[in-house]
Amino acid sequence: MKRANFGKLGVILATAGSAVGLGNIWRFPYMTGENGGAAFILVYIVCVFMLGIPGMIAEFVVGRHGAANAARAYGRMTRRRSWGLIGYMGVFTAMIILGFYAVVAGWCLQYLYASVAGQVQGDTAFVSDYFSTFSSHPLYPSLWAVAFILLTHFVVTRGVRNGIERASNLLMPTLLFLLLVIVVASCMLPGASAGIEFLFKPDFSKLSSRVFLEALGQAFFSLSLGTACLCTYASYFSRKINLAASALQIALLDCVIAILAGLMIFPAAASVGVRPDSGPSLIFITLPAVFTQAFAAVPVVGYIISVLFYAILALAALTSTISMHEIGTAFFREELRLSRRQAAFIVTLVCSLLAVACSLSTGAVPQLQVFGTSLMEFCDGLTANLLLPLGSLLTCLFLGWVVPRRIVKDEFTNWNSVCRCLYPYWLVAVRYVCPVAIAAIFLHQLGVI
Image (cartoon, rainbow, N blue to C red; front, side, top):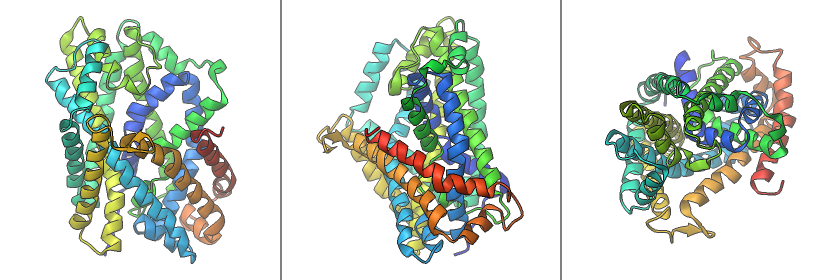
């Protein structure tokens, strides 16, 4: 099968879109709030550039050299075909993530609809009751989750250039524009300066080993490392693409959007006296009440901001679900020799069933448990605490110690045409620094350190 390639702009926007998702708009703000604000952001940025970029390049090298789905790409890098199991694990991980991620994405669609209908304007108690009632409903959350997967399916079946790249070229600029609109409105509120100060005035007394490990984990989570996503997208890179430069540009865009998400949320929260460490409930319970209170003098502005905010969440989620879906689609298409539509149908069906089960486990059918936790929480914990760090760790060890050095150097330097002086430093990072850092994340998430 002839393999399509991304255009030059598509490489940046599509791959950045895979990284920029709810991890930036939802997880990054509450992680920042819980870990001290500006000091956490500084550590996060250092982690992205010192450790995240080398990890990204490692997955790019595998993907572009293999020019195939993740499972086949890892197998092509060396004669030891057993290393292809890293790719299989990546496909498995991505499909689990898509299953439970679609539930949260479906919540975003529901809140977008509710914002347009004016149903989530009220105090925190009202919004909390609204969220509890909706999330425990036996039908509506499942329908929204499946609807989101079907929307993703529609984009993926249109192909690499006409579907994924075209959608990314539209979604990413729209996402950035809407973010900027809300950032301006949020920063102009009375008392917003306290939220801005929280983001940009570091208090280094709040730094601890826990903050470093949380920032490192967020960097790997935000950049989609360990999911085979970057590897799959890199299989559509042409031989002319500078892998190191692309990784740098994607990391910059990822950091900019994460910081803009903080500027969108914390100044508005500060203006009404909401603590920045509200945790995961910040998006679906705290913020609707914040928008209602912050713009109480001009309710129509609060209404518009609320609608735009949940539109941003839905767009961010879509850019990520597209990449997750493509991992499985590419795998089934090439391994089973199916058409793109047939392969995408398999992914859509499996992930829809998992999404429905995860959705029901959060309230309507609490008996759907694994090891005493809801299926939703189990899938989240399995991927974040085990499969993602393990995939990243094995990829770094694979590139650093198993793949022939000539292959790795040729891919990194575009056959000695770019970045030759950076190659030794990158190799040291992949062989030694990244594995140690990832192992630290792994042990921290398991509660060992």
